[in-house]
Amino acid sequence: MGGSIYLQPMSVIRGKWYNKEFRVIKRLGSGGTASIYLVREISCAKEYALKISRDMAGIDREYRILGQLASMPYIPGVYCRDDCIIEGEVCYFFSMGYFQGENLKRLFHGKKIPQKTALKIVAVTGSICCALNRRNLYYCDIKPENLIFDRETGSVCIIDFGGVVGKGEAVTQFTPDFDRASWGMGERIADEGYQGFALLMMLLGFLMGDLGCGGRDFARLKARVDKSQLSKNLKKVIIEGLKQKSPGLKRLAASLMDAAGETADKGCDDRRRVDAIIDIGLLLSITVFAVILIMVLWNSGMGYF
Amino acid sequence: MDGQLISPMELREIIVITDGKSNIGGDPVDAARLVHKKGIIVNTIGITGKEEQEEPFVELDGIARAGGGICDIIPLTRLGYSIQTVTRKSVQMTIEKAVSRQLRKITGYSLDEMEPDSRTRILEYIQRVGDEVDLRCVVLLDCSGSMKNRIKTAVNSIQELLLSLRARRGRFCLGIVVFPGDAGRESRIVSGFTSDFEELALRLDTIKVGGATPTYAGIIRASEMFDGQDEAMYPDGIHEGSKGLRYGLWQEENGEKPFIL
Image (tube, rainbow over the protein chains, first blue to last red):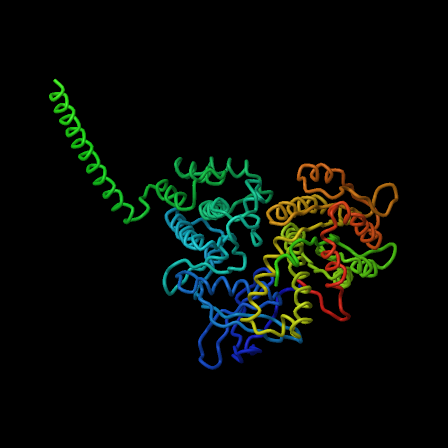
């Protein structure tokens, strides 16, 4: 009812300002006030995902955000934005890169997935968010539906940037199961804690098959986590993260990896080695300095006598 | 455009939450039209059940059209999300309309008639104003017999709304009116304007269900809550301009289509 825009396969969308024409192939889905279609640009036969809505501001905003992220991997690139008329009403749309693959919700069907895979997906998603945060673009609607397993690159990609806001701003697009405020664990404001909460909820969903709490009762969820087969360390990281005691996304991802009994990545290993070398260097220089100091004192002492 | 022009204003909204058609008293669409003339926006949220007909929702659509607001028809499970989206979108839309009208006066073009690349900065500005503008909101909740099994979710979703409003930059306050009221009255003010979460939660506990659906009376009562608020909020009178904005700028032109979620 209302917001969705229904387009028949094979129908043509014609841009009002830039005259590009797109042929609708199929409907991919809808989110919020917008609908998404797989389309083919008629002049060049290239395939795009096309997001269309009657909400001018929403479409404009998302296009603007994606435009800022043009060079980043795991994020759809945007191409053309325009207006069109559908059933006598002005609609607004933009075309973006199409990831060939399923979203994770459809891919996993609410089944449990192996811990290693789950942790990896969450860590990758977390690191994409980290990269966005550095540009003050906080992606808050983190959930399996918004993650696509791209068959071409074999990686996880993020879609739907309508809900991206700046740090400390009100979160406008969320899903109650992954929303900190809905669980009574904090404000609905964009920060790393909010993202961490959503990531951990997603992780729990992956590990346990479902969140299994219609009422979103945190005590019940905690009891369920405590009873589960997860390692003690991992349980601790998850519960503390959900309670907003985790110091940041990066650290959260690292501690998740540690809890799973793995080192974060090879880069980190090298860093540890470097750290060790620096430590030895520091120890040596302190010793040398102390020896010199003693000698100087000794000499001055001699002079005094 | 100068930021000062619009930011110190206050928007006034009524959000009607109901699961049915008005069945007693005047036509609620008339009430919405009347209220909108006073510069108040009326939004509607309709809760669908399984065997409901289209009819009640035609009325809700009409109320939102006449009230310059948004109509959203949703199943009960989405109420919490809907109530905050409707509020946010209607604020956005109201400012969008006001700015678009001003633009048209100055440049001869409305936002629709501008090329996407040139309107993007104006939209960015509108969005910022939408987050910063002060908001005074009345939730008008249907407590007729049919809401019996839905009232708990509805109450929760009002608390949800408060959570979302708290995260905005602008000031806000929320009042609650239910219809019908107790002891045969058509409506009852459950809570006057407040931004205190605890207080509101306490007041929400007093809501009882039962009776007919006098939507007309409810809308009028909700709009009366705004009367006399100007003086209280702006003792120095420096915001007179914003009053002008509210009363003049977004009066509906005939035949203008409302934004529907």
